[in-house]
Amino acid sequence: MSARSVEDHQEHVSGLLAALHTLAPTALPLTEALGSIVSADVTSPVDLPLFRNSQMDGYAVDAESVRNTPATLAVRGVLAAGSGTPPKHLVGSAFRIMTGAPMPEGADTVIPVEDTTGVSKHAVTINRGRAAGEFVRERGSDITAGMLLVREGTRLEPRHIAALAAVGAATVITYTPPRVAVITTGAELKSAGTQLNPGEIYDSNGPALASLARANGADVVSIARSTDDPDVFRELLSYATSVADLVFTSGGVSMGDFEVVKETLQPLGAAFGHVAMQPGGPQGSAVVNEVPILSFPGNPVSTMVSFEVFARENIRRAAGLPPIASERRPLTAALRSIPGKRQFLRGRRSGDGVEPVSGTGSHLVAMMAWADVLLDIPADVTELDAGTPVSVIPLSAWN
Ligand SMILES: Nc1nc2c(c(=O)[nH]1)N[C@H]1C(S)=C(S)[C@@H](COP(=O)(O)OP(=O)(O)OC[C@H]3O[C@@H](n4cnc5c(N)ncnc54)[C@H](O)[C@@H]3O)O[C@H]1N2
Ligand code: MOO
Image (cartoon, rainbow, N blue to C red):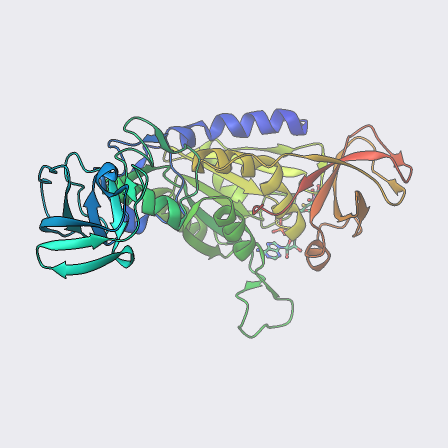
């Protein structure tokens, strides 16, 4: 691959990842669906309430018969919630009725038990009348069949689960999170929490890429680390492509003597080259066992910026998440930028503006933790005065 602009490489990567957008949706049992993203509008198959029922424990009557109180009425029976097909109401009589019980056909009002005096099992005195319709929950007064219940793109919260359950949906159709595998490379890498020998460092790209993928809706199915031995890398790659829809690698793509990613993937038809950006210049991509591989440079900031610029929006779209829009904010301080490369500098929102928070070095992983945006500086810009509006890319996946 010859040198490319960021836009050209974005287009190339989006082409490689096109299959992520056609993953078949998943039908999830409601009890497992919390937090998943609904992949198509859900309309209600039924009216809610399903039938006309009482809002109170009391007596179902017709309003007309209790207009003048006190009024003593014959009680024809007791209706509990779940009590089946409702009986017919006879004008001037009452049924004792519980909250949620179907209203007798023809009754139009419920008198709460507090407003009555029991005379006997078969008679009641109503002490206060009510207007027709009071304390009656009409069929369909919440939602009617065919109305929109949950919109496509909704992240399911408990209240959505409640509504779906209420209309009798046992499952909900959700986006299938793309499965992502991460392979970091480098003989110098150890896991956090272990003892380092001289020259070794902790692997931050594994946790970084895995959590970036997860935060943007992916299902991270494997995180592995390879030495610089091509056989080890090949084996990890073979496993990763058997379980994932997309594989990220980090490191081993530049000009050194031990570039295991490049060495292994190039014979398989991978493209390696330079993208006119900093950080994240060296980039590789391949398709192995029909699975797209994105090979990011090993420097920690380069890896994270590569994810943000090339992978994030593709994963979000596949997962059903909305895009994260860039913002325009005035710089709080002047800055300089390298000519010929699009710069993604680390910045932090400050009031309505944005301040640069780090040097340009792509090893400055701790400084990046202070940033909440990337300042997106075009390739042809070398100097910007304080107050100049710049495009900024939010880093947080959670809004
Ligand atoms: N002669 C040249 N050297 C380099 C060039 C170049 O154009 N000519 N480009 C530089 C740039 S820019 C970058 S970015 C890096 C990319 O190098 P690699 O992708 O081959 O990455 P490594 O050499 O494996 O590692 C680079 C750096 O990052 C550290 N690293 C690697 N993996 C991890 C990890 N998982 N966690 C934390 N840190 C990691 C590694 O120790 C190195 O310090 O190449 C430049 N060189
Ligand atoms: O392209 Mo590298 O990412 O600048 O350090």
